[in-house]
Image (tube, rainbow, N blue to C red):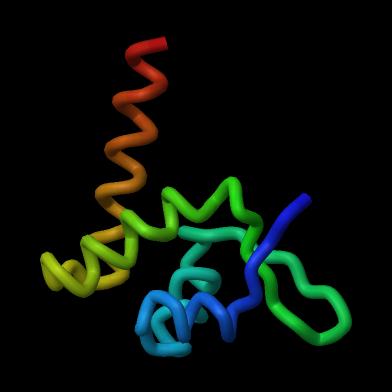
Amino acid sequence: MERISREECVRVYKIDRAFFDDLVDSGLIETVIEENTVYLHYDKLAHFEKLVTWHYDLEINIPGLEVICQLLERIEQLQR
């Protein structure tokens, strides 16, 4: 499966490494660690990009992102 390293995400999306790590710590994104390198799978990039946009453009903090994601998940469940 294709993936991108944390360092590459930080460079490409021009974000703080601490923000990336906060997303991981809060469970908002899932990563894999291989040979001491943290990776994000490409199929999770769209979700990651939404979180980056909401945080940097709309100034939503990590707890706010958690609430938004929980609400969106509930909506998806109800629609199913």
